[in-house]
Amino acid sequence: MAVDLENPSNFITTRLRQAVNWGRKYSLWPLPFGVACCAIEFMSTVSSYNDISRFGAELVRFSPRQSDLMIIAGTISYKQAPILKTIYAQMAEPKWVIAMGACASSGGFYNNYSTLQGADRIIPVDMYVAGCPPTPENLLYALTLIQAKVEKEGLVPAAVRHTGHDDVRSDVRNEFRNEVQG
Image (tube, rainbow, N blue to C red):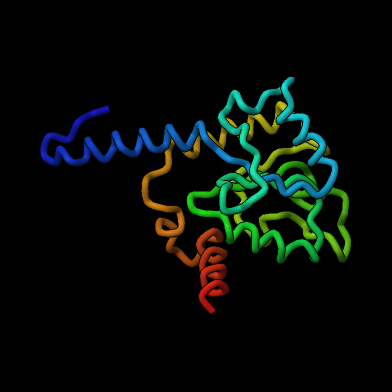
């Protein structure tokens, strides 16, 4: 890492960002939105055999206000879609989402009138885990990729950084802000 001698304040900001992101990286608090078979695999992932606590995500929370990582595990019906949007809106920034399994990622083999064809149709998804159901190792790998993403983020919240109208994350966040304010 080089130090900008013309502007030494950048050095302090960069070090602060690295320290904060290191803390965030190893203290993710997952919120499971488990609605189908993949939820069983999620339980296997947090068991002692796979030990998700090695990655700093051992405190599984069922309150969105205490969580920063949502793991959508399973099929999402259109009746559940507003609930999922509400839970996502209640999570504080910064927040990340993992779509676990084929059903959460693309609807899986449920291509019918009642099944949402992927969680990314209503909320932004940061990582997709393939499989039906995916193995605990696949979920742990996705968790390490989320940690790498967390480590690279700046101190400015994602909602502030994403300002373009062609950005899906920004459009969804603006929609949530309007619903909360209005």
